[in-house]
Length: 169
Image (cartoon, rainbow, N blue to C red; front, side, top):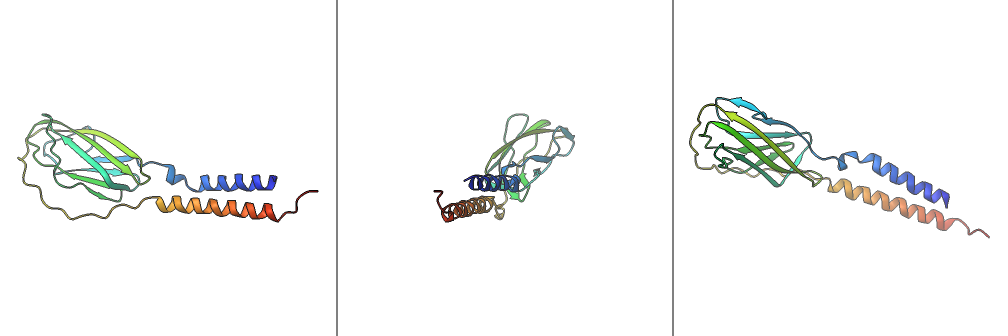
């Protein structure tokens, strides 16, 4: 019976140690325009770069002007670890705030906040362009299913080993 417990503990330890990326959440590495930056020319997009791929499911980026108007336009573009939100109508001089809610590949939501300042007025909004759909980032479902299957095989082997041993008399 001690062997069975030892085998189960060892297999659980191997399972936990071998899947550290499944437990980690994506983290923001950079934002363009940079958080806290000042620029004379208004940007045409806001880009967020994460340390690992993120999902386009549920992704949302809001860019508010100094007057509180959302200047994010068009469809958000999520490719691997980059999230790009087109912006238009940055006509106000002042501080623009960026608030984003992104879902990491492991399914956990990530909140991102930042800001940048524009020192010269930009152009008025233009009609939104039609963008092509992007490929959705993969998820860790395969890793989780594989880990569960490995665990089931280990448990099944433990049961077979215990049943093969003759009962003590």
